[in-house]
Image (cartoon, rainbow, N blue to C red; front, top):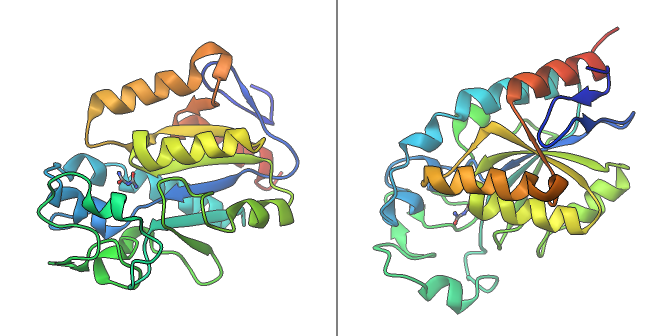
Length: 228
Ligand code: C5J
């Protein structure tokens, strides 16, 4: 494999001199830990915890090589003015957005449950974006932050594969970014949805983008941007 390629599906992903940003989607307590919003919706959160060591390995590499990392959180303002009633009222959850739960108000910025899990806590200086939608481009400065840094390539990790990760990847694809989803660094409460999302993204010659294992991503980033 060429120094500036990642072995990927549906074919090799080309890197450029400007390194790809790592976008870590919504690794917040609300979704990952028991008692949060994810479990209030009736989901088993344990599968999501399994990807934490893989994301940590990627994060450690990015930090060591001084590559750009962006963390996101699904978060609404305490007055919920940036949360449409349709989003609050949908479904029959025991806890709704803004309600007080075991980890504070659900999906509200600044509440304990809204924080990124300790293992992946952003370091001072890393970008941490709050997003009121599922996609990280909607109502956030993400596009302008990336453009200001000349970033054209994005690698995705986080949860959940078919909701916030896929939505963000599709938004990014429509804005001209070259997107790759790291297969073992993303997870869903529904294994079949994860599998289907990976297939959807990479079908038809990569209609939304590429996917690759963290092993191939780490090897290629080391070789492309590590010390010679
Ligand atoms: C969801 C997310 N699933 N981060 N949010 O509501 O995927």
